[in-house]
Image 1 (cartoon, rainbow, N blue to C red):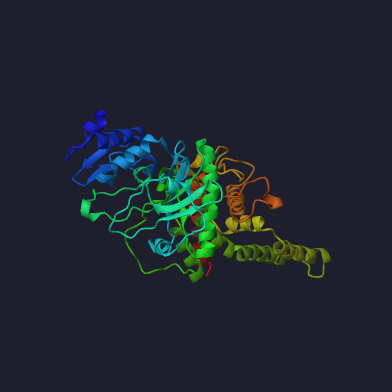
Image 2 (image 1 turned 135 degrees about the vertical axis):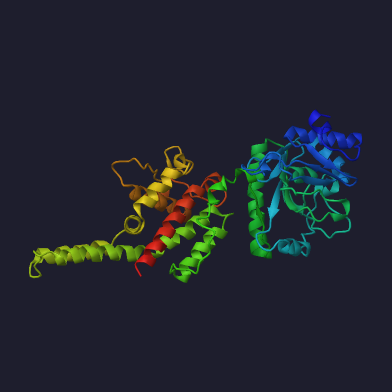
Length: 445
């Protein structure tokens, strides 16, 4: 065993098979932290720790010791972490395993699955020759075990997670589980494939799982989704804003209920960055017409107040007409520029880009492609206009389909992916714009 394992606190000795399983986990930088009569507790896999989490965190991933032999056998087969999803790929053994998440009340989808059945017409070699992936299950628990045979060599299975998948994908706990306190270990979908290159297996498995989850929803009313590695979800520390004050006052800001709902909803969609962005954008969208109208009325009032204005002069009347015409036929992007010019204090934008450490996010090498960059030092375009163009560009990438000819060269910004994970500075910027617009509306009442 490695020094890392030997130095770990051991309260019970391990046999040779258990020691080998522990040693194989060190290849993933997973070390033994504690053990007892019925459990072994390990450090979480690095992709299941947040970027800001202390490396000496007390969180541990605990496994029943009687599953360590199965863990060793799995690791011997050449298990590797999935490149994007929480899961594993066993290229030599011929399967891909991904964690399933219940988006509704935890356990509701699992309960429906336990009542589901599969077609008895199809036979499967994985069942017949006993090559199914081992799973973490208790004999005294009712568990889901659906093996769905395909017409080709590909089969699908929804069952409790395997020991190796659990060791690499679990969030962990602060205290090791005792033997009599084990619950369920969660469900995974396993895709049995012909052995091949890991990237090709991941692609084929992803397509099969996407179709499976869609049909489970449409045909069976069962909703699951796969998950991404925790470490790849983007740095959300920017959301942890310092409180302006600890004093709670009777509310003084007047806000429309629908805007308050959107603002609160945006904060609750932390697992869906594009939706959070769109919720803040809807607040801006709600105020576009009023901002354009306000500017148009101000321009009209200025023209009518001109001592040289002649209501009998055709040209003077035409200027009034054109102000109204332009405001009526203004594009949404132009309306957004007007809104930010009218409602957002210039110093609020200046301070946002001056005090944050995320300026590179908005630059040419930022992670969000196909949208305008923001350079506070740009002498040709105002900061407000740059911000408006960027916000509108992100909005389009989220809501427009890929085959829309107007946006064909820019891919859609999907809920799960590297760009969505990197969207948080833009979400905070949209939040700032929303608070400024709400404040402006209150001040104008």
